[in-house]
Every structure is written in structure tokens, then in C-alpha cells.
Length: 333
Ligand code: NAI
Image (cartoon, rainbow, N blue to C red; front, side, top):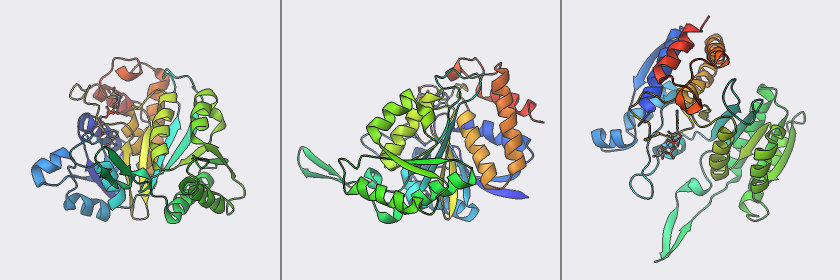
């Protein structure tokens, strides 16, 4: 079976980690034709737009993309390409499995939880305006439609992966209407999944609980902004951003990406940890029904972590990006 996959190498460390992952996927024997496209500043320079039509067409056609991180200017300049992609392709669910890896310094070596984040609305609606000089209004949108479908996604995922509990995280004590609606939709959907426990927690308490007793969580379901923040917190619980995968999934396709950014502080040095994007690649292989290849790559990656000899700097080792990739390839059965 041959797959055509859209590849967005991205900015900063993006090209370094994506070439490592492409090499590993190919070494696993998966036949892929990669369609490489640029987005963000690189695309703006070449094509006058941050999200070229060719790129969007390629993802729509292939229904699957692997994406490196893309730099977003802070406080000025173009709007986030990541948010743009999610909205344009209606990739409404963001999935981030957070699982501790062997030999990675972390406070919670047994942790295994999943963050599901709503991807299309909330304060990311991008509706901001100056009311009068010195006063800015930023609008939070929560809809029944988006809250219901992302809740269904979380419960379906729980059922498929034999997970036991979904916890909705909210601030409905303060935002009674918006977060109240999100919570109401969550509990409505939960009725169709009686075998899965549904509960909820207020977001500030949830953050404290995550730091003190994260093992109480199984799947966490959050609106867009809380999900953005809490999923990075969860990455920190198991050793950092270089490790955790992410997928943006909708009815028409999926974009698999690392949760970290373009890491300008280490870009170009060949020292970035490709594990996050590799784990996203493993999720992608499963999505493509390449289950054997996904398992072989995952086993090889875990073996490299278990042996603990080849580790990148962010987790206390010395290895370069490609050395890690080669070690994973060598460990493949
Ligand atoms: P960042 O994730 O790029 O970096 C935060 C820290 O983590 C840095 O010290 C960096 O060196 C380290 N780090 C991140 N990934 C790593 C890896 N694979 N291996 C080793 N160390 C790693 O976050 P930051 O600095 O806030 O953002 C930089 C740029 O990335 C910004 O323009 C931001 O908008 C963009 N960004 C893009 C994302 C995406 O495309 N999905 C997600 C997050 C940020």
C-alpha cells in the first residue's frame, strides 16, 4: 500500500526533526510519496501568503499531513498558521497522548493520560477589537455544535482505546454561559457511553491536581485555550515538549504535529529531540492503518529509551537529532 502524505517541514528545528522522522518511517518499510509544502514566513516570502492554496489542496486531497512547527510572530505580523490550518480544514479535535518514557527524568515515570482539546473556537476565534483607546475586547465563542462533536470525539477515543474516564475541564463557575454550555454538551454526550465514567473539574483545581496527583486523570477534555495551556503542563510532567505528540483531526482529514514550537534557541544545531514528531508519526501510521509499522517504530523507539544510551540534550544526553533517528532504525526488528 502506498500513501501520499503532505509534508510541511516548518521553521526552526522543523526541517531537522521532520527529516529524522521521514527517515524512520521509510526505514520501517512504509511506502510514502511525500508532497512537501511550505507555510508561514517561508511561504509568505515565496508565494505572498502564509497558507498557500496548493498546500490546502494537497492536504484535502491526501487527507493526511505531517507538520513541523511554524513560527508565529508575537503581538504583530501574520496570524498563526497553525490556527489557520485547523480552522480552514475544520480539524476540530486536538489529540495529545501524554505518556512517560523510560529513562527520561520526570516526576511521574508511570504517567499515561490523554488530552483532547477543542480546536476551532473559544478565545481563538481571533475576534479582537479596540473599543476605545486603552480598552480591547477579545471574544470567546463557544457553540453547542463544536462542544458536542469534540465531546463525542473524546468518548469515541475512550471506547476505542479502552480508557475508563473522561474529565471535562472548565471554569463554568465564572463563565456560566459559555463554559456552562460546554459542560452541558459534554454530559449530554456522555449518556451514550455508560461504560465510561464522565466527571468534571474546574481548570485551576485541575492544574493543581495534575501537579500533585496526575494519575487520577485518564482522558481530559478541554476548550481551546485551557487545552493549549494544560497540554503543555502535561508535557512538562513527563519530561518536556520534545517528547509529546499531537494530532489535529477532523472529518476530512488529519494533521499530525509535535506540540512544541520552532525552538529558535537551538535551531540549526542538529540537536533537537525528534521524539515528539516521531510519536506524532506513529499516531499517523495508526490513522493510516499501518498498524504493524506503527508498532515496530514504537517498539524500536521505546527500546532506545530503555537502553538510555542515545539521548538528546533536552533529556540529559549528548546525542544529535540524526544519531537518535539512526539508533531507532538500528533497533527496529
Ligand atoms: P518552543 O516549543 O519552540 O520552545 C520552548 C523550549 O523548548 C525552548 O527552550 C526549546 O529549545 C525547547 N524545545 C522545544 N522543542 C524541542 C525539541 N524538539 N527538542 C529539544 N528542545 C525543544 O516554544 P516557543 O519558544 O514559545 O516558541 C517558538 C516559536 O514556535 C514561536 O514562534 C511560536 O509561535 C511557535 N510555536 C509553534 C507551534 C506549532 O507550530 N505547532 C507550537 C508552539 C509554538
